[in-house]
Structures are given as structure tokens and as C-alpha cells.
Length: 430
Ligand code: ATP
Image (tube, rainbow, N blue to C red):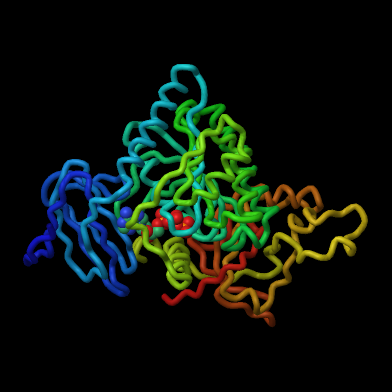
């Protein structure tokens, strides 16, 4: 039922409960316009006669409950209508969660805490977005907990975060990120430091629970937790840990029966574990594609969406002004550990980094920890568990002059002077 090409693009007429899927070609842009009827993109409603622009590599589904017609202009890699979508299942899931919120409201209890799991490329983030959008459209205030350190939808890669959702996601930009709670993890896979990963999961759960105690809407709204696609070995254990830390009520398992059975076996019986199909529209992403998305996310942090809204600053920071740490000492054989020290201790240890050339291009988190805090064993915990207040990228290092140049969203001086180094690098091509 794809239609004729007009001056303003190609027209597509969609029947009810179908979706138009398209991908934007590399280096291209595509404009979408809703001409008649009602439609949504991942749970966010489209406005009629407004042009939405999607950048290179975007993979989008325009879904309609009632039927609609839309037009696309620009170069798409693919564009087709599918009648086979799991959206009705997702809507039913939402309805069940909403029922739980209503019950929570009545009984003065807390709302549903939902963990979304599955291997890579099954649409976990998309399901989270749809469920959050449907909840917030009903006036709920759910929290998005983002544990995917490779592809965070909230902050730069290498972070774990929580965000209170107050309005539907912007069709082009996603959820507006004002005042998220962000922790430094430092790399794009949990396996780099699983102890730290689990610890930060617990920290987020604790902060969320505290918020629920003082904020009734947050408590009733519950949370939707997006997780990593690593579902074996320690990755699986991390999911079990997360379920217990957040005391989740519902686990949505996308597309993997084995994972579903394992979680059913290992989680307490009162946790509802539900197997859900993935959407045929979810597109597998290559390593390069993931790297590009990560880069884009960092660029967005400094330059704003599509590089037009923010103007970052570059300035020099003297080595003596800051203290830089890496979290986690390289693991050493158990037999070589100092007396009374366990492997856990080494993974959560703060290791001072002396600034040198190799810092160049690294992303550094600026810890919100008090500058005057002494760094002893006690304080190291303080730094691990302190949220991040921003990020900088080292663009140059002058060892002679003992200064480094940083790219920063705000002008000098740095808001705080404790910096945590990430494995992640960003080369600023602006
Ligand atoms: P990860 O492996 O990073 O955890 P994921 O399982 O969270 O991935 P998503 O990020 O939700 O997967 O989806 C992967 C890609 O597929 C995204 O670019 C998303 O926009 C796209 N996508 C999801 N659903 C559809 C759909 N129905 N039609 C077209 N594209 C879709």
C-alpha cells in the first residue's frame, strides 16, 4: 500500500495496527510528515503537518493504532510497511503495569519495577521507551534506569544512570535529560569490572528507593530498567543481582527462551517473568554502527542535538589542580594478593593516574565528591558512590608545562577537581 511519489516525498497509507519501518542512509537525512490520521514513533505521538527529521543511520518505525497516511522525503535505505508487529503485546503489557500502578495507589504501595532483558539487538531500549511513553502519557512519573553501559540512552557511554520521566520522548531526540542521576562506570562493557557494575547497580537501586520514600508519584510510577545484552556467565549474574537490588516485580525477557527459563528458575516465585517476542523491525547493528552511536552520544553531550544547541569550551587545566583516578587495579592472582585483601577490593580500588600523553582523547568524568575529601580507603568508597556532575575530554597534554587542554560543556573552572578516567576515547572533529 505504499503510494505515489509527490513533490513533497513518498506517500504511505497505513492500515490500523501496522507500521512503516525505514532506515536512513549514511550521510543522509529523511523527513517524515503525518498527513492524516494518528500515528506514533516508539510510543510518542506525531503531530499532524509537522516535519520530523531523522539523521543518518536512524532506524524508525511509525506505528498507527487507527490508520494514517504519512510522507517520507530523503534517501531511505529501506522503507516498507509491516502488519506483523508486537505492539499490541507491548500495549497489553503496559495495561498490566498500569493496573499495578492503580492497585499501588489504592493500597498505598509502590508501583511496578520492571526489568527488560535479552541479548543484543532485540529492541530492549525500544520496549523501555514505549512503556515509559505510555505511562507518562497517562500522567505517571516512571523512572528510567539505564544500565546499558555500551549504548546508554540517557548519558554518555560508560555510565549508569536513572532519569525521572516527566514527558513523552521527543520524536527526534528521545527523552529530555534534565537532571539525571549518573554514575561513572568507565567502559562500554560490564565485564571490564563486574564488581563495580554490580555495586553501581545497588547504588542506583538505593537512591531510587530513597526517592520513592519521599515522592509518592515516583513510587507509584515505578521504574523500567534497561539492561545490557550480555546475558551469559557474569552478565547473567548481574541481571539476577539487579533483580534483587531493585526488588523487581516484573521481568520482560525479549526473544530468548533459554534466558527466560533460567530467570524463572533463579528468581523468587513472586517475580513475574514474561517472555516476549522481538519486533521484526529491530535492526541488527554492527560493531562500527555501535561505535558511531557511542561517538554521536558523546558529541551530543558537548555540542547538543545535531551539533547546534551547545557551545563547548576548551581550556587548560594544570595537573596540580586535579586528581585523576582509574577505578580498579589490574587483577592479580589470588595467591599474590596482600594479606586480608580480596579480588573485590582490587576491582573497587581507586588507582591514581599520573597525567601523561596517553590521557589524550580520553573521556573523564567529573566526580561530584567534595574536593576537600581526603582519599583514604574510606574515601574511595565515597568517590565510587558519588554521582558524576559532568564530563570532559582531554584534547591535548603538555607534559613539559604540566597542563592538559580539555573540552568542557561549561567554561573554566572545572566544577570539581576529582576526575575519573574512562577507557572510552572521543576524537573531536569539529
Ligand atoms: P542493544 O543491543 O544495544 O541493547 P536493544 O536490544 O536495546 O539493543 P534497540 O536499541 O531497542 O535494541 O533497537 C535496535 C535498533 O532497532 C534501534 O536503532 C531502533 O531504533 C530500531 N528499531 C526498534 N524497533 C524497530 C521497529 N519496529 N522498526 C524499525 N526499527 C526499529
